[in-house]
Length: 507
Ligand code: MLC
Image (spheres, helix red, strand yellow):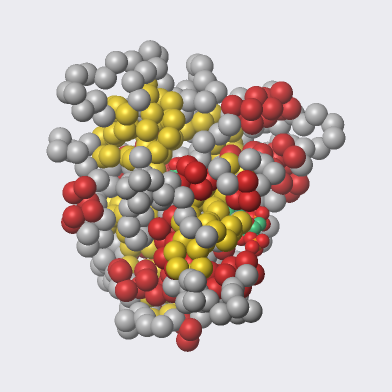
């Protein structure tokens, strides 16, 4: 698999070599590569029956399961574009995505508490279809198109980049294929591998770093529909799993739920962690418990994976490792124009074949996200040590990473500010033992709010719950007479985040 491939040609190569090997396993389905190929063809038929053609966006708002995976693989075969969103997105969030990328089709799970099409304020002519997460979508309509080309759009992934409202990052087949090829090699994947997949499928980590690499290597993808610590331990200790990928919250929860007798997952050859910083204490505690050193790596939606601690060689706690092969990693030169010294802190900038193709319909934001000489501005701050290992120390952008999911303060503030009694709000992250960072808010109410009708915490949260997916909701809210500001009038988030009422027991 190279950057001249498409995602489907990579899968077909696995099929040609490993038709009889198990490609997919879950509690309800087991499929060989030959059977997976047929299931993808059926899903292509299902999409074609719904008039999906190459280039059409297909919005997937689905719980994790075989249906999500098959529809994604069918898009990759057909040339239509996967646009995955959080299954618990609110009607407003779904409507935003529909307005932004005008998908031909929105595919929803069947849960009653989900944003139902009738509750969507507008859907621009987007058709809606329902599929149960554990069902195989089957249709017979023949595909009438040529296969997609490496330069075609494969996936739109919503992210807020460094600022502003969510934007669809355009990821082309060749860009994703390039990153998959790098990871397959760097992490020593073979067809003998069996990945325990506990991540959500609607992001780069679960969909590409985990699921796609497994399928492109002829390995077995064992899909758990959600992360559950005791079930995960059972699988890890079963002797059948060779690879596990998690976010730090998952490792933290695995440590808390560890079996009483020292667990030795000796069949697992690699544990990786990403999407949020892994505390060195977590890495050390996991090593002490299991004898395994977690490999930490670094990436982002717009890039895929950029840096990784080595498979063989020193994995440094607190570092995400050197640049992956074929990826350029540099620290922005200081404004004085001199070359950065080793260990100078600056913005991390990235280049390489996997860098995205820009944001959907947003040329200005696309331009702002690149330097003049074409490197991607990550918005993360870090330094390279004398061994070339990257250490991340903070962010230039306002971003909270909660349990591996990005939350943009502005989006939460906008939802709170819409409440008629809220004069203004400010949202920031505070350290949290479980989620790494927790979203919290300071809120100032209008002086004119009627006594007795002033909103309390529950009411404000209920208000926000209609507007924001659950992981974006503030875990704590402080009612303030004014927001902490500097002399220029700018809200001081560092002062806000140190308010005792906003810091939980894990801070
Ligand atoms: C769930 N909740 C969260 C949350 N996940 N709150 C804040 N942050 C999160 N990440 C809420 C729930 O809605 C619930 O709210 C309460 O917290 C308790 O939920 P839970 O049952 O404990 O949550 P769970 O379903 O177990 O989910 C936790 C999790 C999940 C850590 C397993 O968040 C997760 O899968 N995170 C991984 C995200 C990921 O894959 N990121 C990759 C992005 S790609 P209430 O109100 O109902 O009690 C990327 C690039 C890269 O970043 O480099 O990888």
